[in-house]
Amino acid sequence: MAASPAPTSTPHLGVVIVTYNAADVIADCLRALQAARGVVLHVVVVDNASRDHTNTVVRETVGPALLPPAQAGAPGIALIKAGVNGGFAAGINLGLERLARVPEIDRFWLLNPDCIAPPDTARQLASYGADDAQIGMIAHRVVYADKPEMIQIDGGTIDQRTGITHNINQFADRDTPAPNAARIEFVTGASLIATRAFYEAAGPLAEDYFLYYEEVDWALRRGTLRIAYCPDAVVLHKAGSAIGSQRLGSVASPFSQYFKHRARAMFLRRHFRPGLIGGMFWSLAKAVQLILQGHGAEARALLRGYFGLAPPAAVLAALSPEARERIGR
Image (cartoon, rainbow, N blue to C red):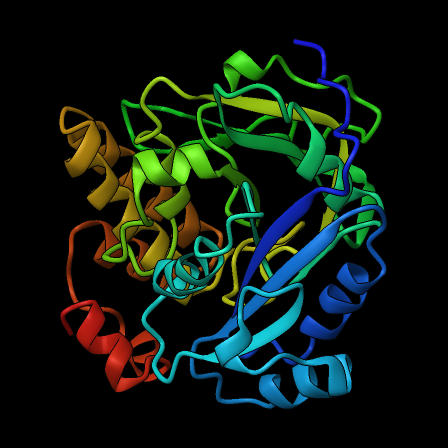
């Protein structure tokens, strides 16, 4: 479907960025948003009780223009300290709740702190298909920041037999033609546009996943609304910088393995219960592969996550008491 003409007035876009120990990346993310053209941004940074100096970096980057929590949702950049690390979805929901109060905002942008948006991306995402009331989510091209000629994801698909998700066009050249939007079953939570119509229909993200699969679950709650694809918008992603997700040429950390596959099992139980058996065999095969590659700790974390066991000691030690309570440990 062709893009609708851009609205004549300057579009507004609500942005939620959840941080946790993101001091090394958040400044570049915010500076990129400050350079955005042709759009009014309402940015809410929700810090999930970072143990590093993330909050200081946010204050220094934005300077005197930083809005206090009471003004979160107004044009500009605000910082809200969540106080506890309730997980990705909890932070997102806090930001969305503030932004949803602002009637001028018709779209919400979930953006990772390790993402960098070129100056025109926000405007493109805010205005694409603006007259199409059936759009619920908007996918777009996300490329690797350290290899920007390579696509990380154009949207994703779900294998109902195992719960494994697949990134459309991953590792393809950046000039690869845009995918057919009808193929897209979810949009990556690293950079996701949700319309107000979607938010009002689907409600907030499920917080019990803690990490991973929240956006996949959310997409399946869109009802008759559809996922569109904005072919012009591009976001650069420093993949895996916050929680040790898999990067190019690397293996995901035990922390990432545990929570990703814990969430996958939860997702299957919620949406595709017959896939639990296939998911089990996939998990066992993947664990064997990791062991043969010398990644025993990662294999153990994967299996403990999928089978709902307690996290490995090293993973548990990295969690705050509040986070442990959130996952029932």
